[in-house]
Structure formats: structure tokens, C-alpha cells
Length: 310
Image 1 (cartoon, helix red, strand yellow):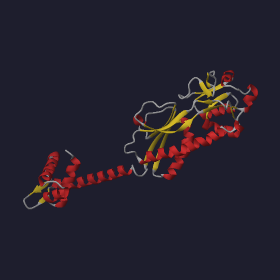
Image 2 (spheres, rainbow, N blue to C red; image 1 turned 180 degrees about the vertical axis):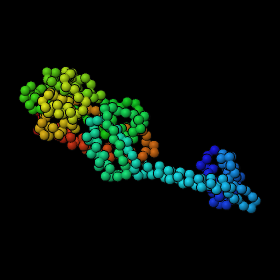
Image 3 (tube, rainbow, N blue to C red; image 1 turned 90 degrees about the vertical axis):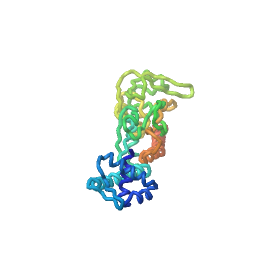
Image 4 (cartoon, helix red, strand yellow; image 1 turned 60 degrees about the horizontal axis):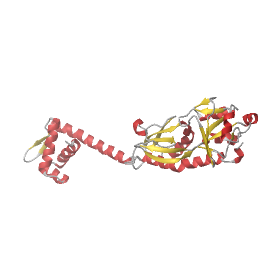
């Protein structure tokens, strides 16, 4: 039995004052309307209407049931309108996950997005992993990967990121400036503990790819701490390009091997489904597709400025 439909028919019968008038309003036969009300009475195990040849009247149980039925139908209409509105106007809580390093780039974009859509409340989670948005209940996951694994999620590309080798001027004065990636084997190399980084540092140029296996010296899983270790002269580190722009601009670090570029990693926005896409998800992903590449380009301009090279 379609309980909501039976409730609607019951309320319409009361409002119209007869089965026949309700049947005309609902484009049903009088017999169908009578049967739907009878099924409802059977379901609640109570008589709701007193029927005579001349009039209908509510029983005491019917009066109470009518009040609750109206409340249920009104709440259902409000819930339906709210759900439909979710596809039109961005509002409500938006649960976003991002890899740790990208948090410094994503947070200012969140602030700008919220100025455009003040009815959206963000819940940002940062960690060193790529969760499945469907399994863990995230609306959007900003993922970094060489290649995307098979997934039921929709993936929107947002750009590429890479890392650059950097060192403090004082360290380079003591140890010299490496001119080839393989020369890094003779230096103290600081290691990022990150699932996206393998045991090897991979560089490429026109002649091909060059693999370096740094010795296990200082290791850290946070880019900002790796920058500090590099600035203190501990050695050469491979730093995400967006984390390297500030120390390069300040002159506390210098970029090494600028003609060799480490392997790029792709950045994606993942979300569970295209069908009936919530407005806050759609507008946030569209905003990221426009604004995040601009942010990457700003950092890229600093990285590729020869004034910051050793």
C-alpha cells in the first residue's frame, strides 16, 4: 500500500465532503477512492469515516488521524521542496576532504567560495590519504594521484602538481651545487614521508628519466616542516612547488636542477554521482576548476623565475 497516497485521498475526501467529489478532484473513480480509504482504515485498524447515504462524518479517531495526516503531508511537501531546492541553491553542510599539503591552497579558496555562497557551511578534513567519497560520506574529495584507480565516483581534473629540489644558500656554499640529478647521491637529502612519494626521486629531461635513491637522513611527512629543515641548512629536500614559493621568494632557499622536472601528479575533484547533483557540490567543483589552476599558475611563475635558482 502507498500509505502517503492513501493519506492524500483520505484528506481530500474530508475536504470535498464526499467520495464522489474527491474522485472528481483526483481523476479517479468513486470506487477507487472508497477502496483506498477502506485500505487505510484496515491499515490503522480503526474506522475513520462514518458513511451514510446523505453525508460523511469523521469518527473521533478520524478527527485525530486527520490532524496528523495533514501534518505528515505538509512536512513531506516541505521536505520535497527542500530536496529539490538543493539542486538549485547551494546551502547546507559541505564535507570536503583534501590531502594535507593542498590544505594551504584550498582554505583561501573556501573563504572566497563562502563569500559567494554564504548558506554553505564547510567541513574540511585533511589527511595523507585518498578516501573513497561514497564509503566515507564526503561530498567532494580532492585527490592527488599519478593515475586514478577504478571508482564509481565522478572525477573532474583540476590540474597538476610537482615538487622541486631546494636547499639553503649556506648548505650550497658548503657542499656545492649539484648539476645533475645523480649528483644528489653525494648530498644529504631530506625525505618526505608521503604515500605519493616512492623511495626514489624521479627526474626527467630531454635525455630521459633519472632515478635517485636518497639516503635515509631526516624524514618528515609535513611539507612546512621540511621547508624549515631545508632553511636551517640540513640538506637538499624535494618540496611541493606550492610550498616552495614562499622560501624561494624570501631567498631562504634556492631551486636546484631547474632543467630537470620531477614527475607531475594529477589533482582531481571526486564526488559520488552526476545524477541530481547537489548545488553546493556542483558550484564548489566548478569554482575549483576555474580558480585552482590560477593558483597553481601563480606558484609556477615563482618556481620558474631564474632569480630563485642556484
